[in-house]
Image 1 (spheres, rainbow, N blue to C red):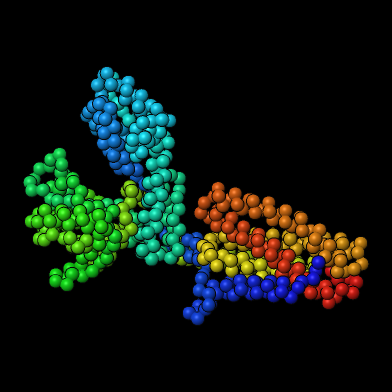
Image 2 (image 1 turned 45 degrees about the horizontal axis):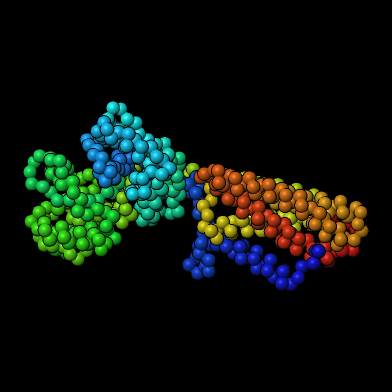
Length: 519
């Protein structure tokens, strides 16, 4: 029925006014506003920087193959099978030798994908991740296609979270960080014109280790030669890691009160504090190398045991470089190195051009629709136009509530929503016209028109909603932005047509129910 109860009118009014207020909050700059959320503009609207990063998984593959060696050794030793001459070649093959009479036993253990006994004893080893072949008594183990996909997915997910933490700490406005394939990550930084600092932070793996410097000038099996970050000297450093960045809880830049140098203070977790205390107790007089991404950034001499669980990294730091190092340590190490394979900077002028183009398109569309509806349906056309404007307020208000990022495809979704809202009103009004021909009572004709057109309107919107859902799950980036705007617009359209427009229509029809030509 066209009748609306007072409570229903009240709820519709409050709901509509609430989202009109949220919509207007985007254009009012005041600290006194009750609602402070804003809709965010995407990279294509406000300008900024676009980076496409590629993950180099070679070190991850090598590391995982190295981690597999002790698992294989221990398992087969328990079976009284001795493997020998383990080595990794081409950064992707693990090669080892076995005695001739033991080859079949090793093959049997590695080939049983379903009930592999190695998996049972050592869950870290998953036989379905590996393929192997045997030539004479030489085994060659490598990652299977499944294993590579799983490894890359895990590496990408870990890198994504680390990048997000680093970018968030820099304080950029609403960054957009997305997966692309299984070894690439897209970073969009709206409003950031100079991405040099972010690029520098993202380009560092930030793999931190603490290791002792060994006296001597030649490398041995358990040591390696590393260069100081400033290039001032080289040092022979033990491969044995005393402490890694995983044991850090916090890191912050500060100025040392005694030397007036800029340093990075760090705090360790319980396990790290215990290890550090033990190492510094037994290593008094030795130099402790603090190694970041394969370069020594500092190598102080241990004067006293450090058992407090906190320490200090000194070096030739500026306050900015110390701040960046602390940020890298807090955010954690990347699982693999990243390289920037594409970089674009969208200037603010281009962004403003996009905004202006979108606003002009929306304004022209609105104007033409308003004129058409008034000419075609007169008073009811005016009601439809008021509903269209309120529908726009509702749509943008909901996007603002969730602090969504509006892109140019999103504006296209809003324009499409306007067209669909008009289509719903046209269907209803044309159906009402048909009902008035055979029904003299205007109230019944209008009520019948709304009821009988409901199926067509809802069906049309549901099919569009299905398309929007498919676009959301199958698409990425701008396509998702379009689908979200379109999906929300469908719900606001149905609400505005069947609640706001129907309320205004019923009010007018009630007051003019005896007119002969009402539409």
